[in-house]
Amino acid sequence: MSPGRCRDRGAVSLEVTITAPLLLLLAMFLIFCGRAASAAIDVNAAAAAAARAAADAPGPAAAAVSALQAVAATGAGTAWSCTTSTQPSRPWRGGQVTVTVSCLVPLTDLGIPAGASRTVTASATQPVDTYQEGPP
Image 1: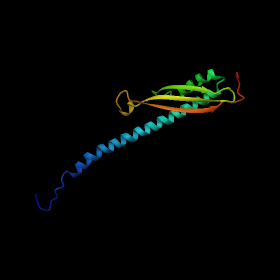
Image 2: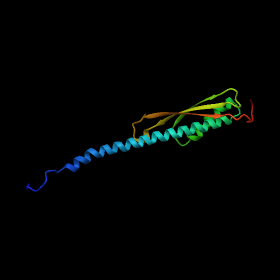
Image 3: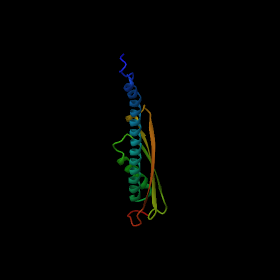
């Protein structure tokens, strides 16, 4: 080797082998965080839709059915498994209804091993119109 040549051969490949996996892990983490935020937003929207549907129902018995149908319509294109809980206040007219939606969101489409999932829960409250039609 001549005296003017540098002895730093292979330094670039070492930097690439260290930074490439770290950048890949960072990208995967950002995608996972975006998916988690998107799921939270979607479940909040489903809870709001369910509360509006329950508040428009003619009575407390129909409110639970309306809330469940609204959640099913909101999450129709997903593989989520959602449950609802409806708590109307007394008296029905002039009161309010609170709907809690809990969805099991599978994470297998992100490359996470089978069986990986996340439960996302949201609640929404809506006033019941005092002058709505239907039984008191």
